[in-house]
Amino acid sequence: MSSIALWFTTLRTPYLKIGYSQHMYSTNKHLPRIRRDVAIFAKKYGIRKASRHYGYAVSAIHKWTRVLDKMGHHPIPTKSSRPHSHPHTTDESIVKKIVDKRIEVRRSAEVVHEHLRREGTAVSLATVKRTLDRKNLLNKRSPWKRYHPPVERPYPTKAGDLVEIDTIHTMQSKKVRMYTFVLIDVYSRWIYAKSYQRINAKTSLRFVAQAQKASTFHFNMIQTDHGPEFGSWFVSQVKKKHRYTRIGKPNDNSHIERVNRTIQEECLDRLIPTPRIFNKSLKEYLHYYNTQRLHFGIQLQTPQEMLRCSQGID
Image (cartoon, rainbow, N blue to C red; front, side):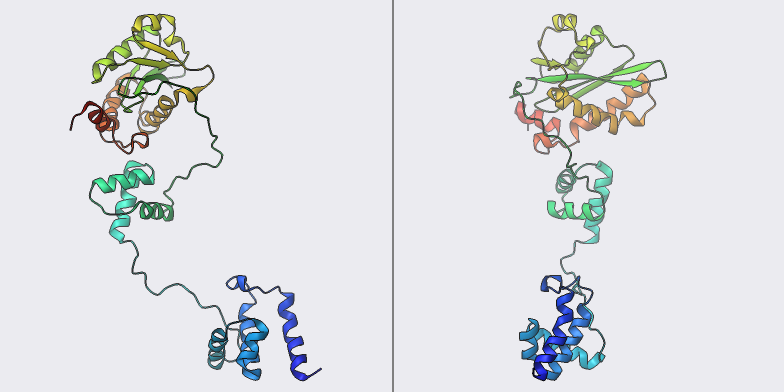
């Protein structure tokens, strides 16, 4: 065996044992030592022979030999590929606006982007998502969230075609509860809510009358669950079309169930549970919800904007 062949055999064996692959360029901890040995081989037998033997580009081996001349026979470390400048980095003032708006509205990236667009800040949705993700302010959808197949239900074509009603139960003390009735118009997402100390069919009827008086459209159909406050007497006295959800299927009332959670998280959970305090805060929150809060279900519009469009008002 010639001296060159013997050198190939003895030098090549260690790198086969460590399982070197070109795809492990940045993760192979042995790579600095390999570069040094390849550069030494190239110095002795030529760069092209080293390139054919190890499979590296001639230009790369040229670079390693130059580094070897400067560093001596030390392992050649991996140089960072991070750029020295970032000319397209998002301006810090834009980043601050995105973060501040996210903290203010506590909504998703799409809603934050729409608020910024309305305020005249030119920024893409991708930039908003990337910024919030880097700041750990992006709520990502749970992979365990179940899919509910759609069911047949009335499809509203105008405001009032279908309104859903439900109640939120809040403990005022160990033995006393308080009840917040909530109504939502499925078409426009307009809502109305009021708290009471009693829950019965008469209270439900009074709530519907107050909601109808506060709205600018007529309720054509009401949908409720099978709670005792929405029993047969309520159905006979409400004098409107009524529809019950399926028993044990709260997703039939999905719009009102989601609104209940929103009202609790953004309003009621921060208050002392008394009817006076609840109703005072609900009055302010309903104004915000119906006139300022953007909604995915109506293409990032507010309920008031949706009602104006449906009624032909500019």
